[in-house]
Length: 450
Image 1 (cartoon, rainbow, N blue to C red):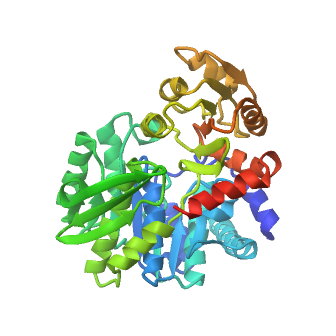
Image 2 (cartoon, rainbow, N blue to C red; image 1 turned 90 degrees about the horizontal axis):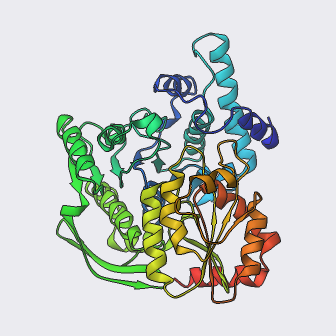
Image 3 (cartoon, rainbow, N blue to C red; image 1 turned 135 degrees about the vertical axis):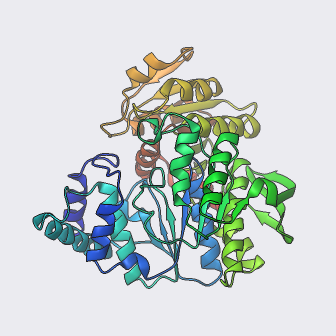
């Protein structure tokens, strides 16, 4: 198959959650037939409700700065599926994606014909197998794997990872992972491996107890950043944080969290803790590599500035915990500024609760809908909103919602697009046609200047 045919085949599988298998047997069977590409390099695995993507990107950047050829597997993508598989920050080229995906597809067809595989894998399983194959072909020294959903039965959880990281845990995907924090934490804790260290930056007391129990059961060293890490001299500059860190008797002065928001410091500390555990296992990761890796880490769609004057910021916050930290950031950084909110959500999310956190920030709200079957219509979002926003516009097309917000905004105002990574992706696609080059260049210059 060529690249376009691969994308068509992926699209035929439906959305990420469709066809999910609550077993690791299918992905293990596929990888065994492919010659176990996942076993050809060491890995780290990162789970959590919020922050796992940021922590994964930071850890991968640290390893790259230390001189290792590093793979990063993440999900979902914002604009192109290629974003999910990166080596040293570079997305997999179209031809390489077509090559590894075709090999996985043909492998699956053989297994289905032989009835070794009971049913067709999911969208995520195909891509996970393709990523393992790409990293093996690309001869990576190390791969960082972001869990797609949960942990215990996620198809990324098939390697004996050198370190596991569990970030914050909150209610999300309850229909799959369980309706309580302890139930969800148990699924996340499934990434912990016997005898291998696990770094936890989880704050919820019930979740922490579940992780402690699981680590003790399988004799896995547990590093809780709340107890082992001390952050001092925390200061914010243009929304990004600089801080000094002391952890396990080692000092890391002058660290810079690469992403906007104080909450990202916790993810940065988790990444540093994981890097320190790898260093103790013999990986050559210096304090300078940690500092440089953090500075150069990038993770789009998380309080990402894409334009200035007016300021346009994108965030994929899609559950109440994520919306809460975005709301806190907005009040801290944009106090006194007029804010306009472009909002969309999937139907299976806590639409009313998220709206209750984000809507009070805005002078005007633009309800829209990404091109996804799971997406709620603007009218559905409005019906779930209590109290009702004072001024609201229903605009089904995300690009037109952005155009309307730009027309209504002055140079000192803020436009925030939030509620779904699918919304973030569609707005990023629309930027070249909606925003003048000068606005986007100014935003890029501001980001690069840290």
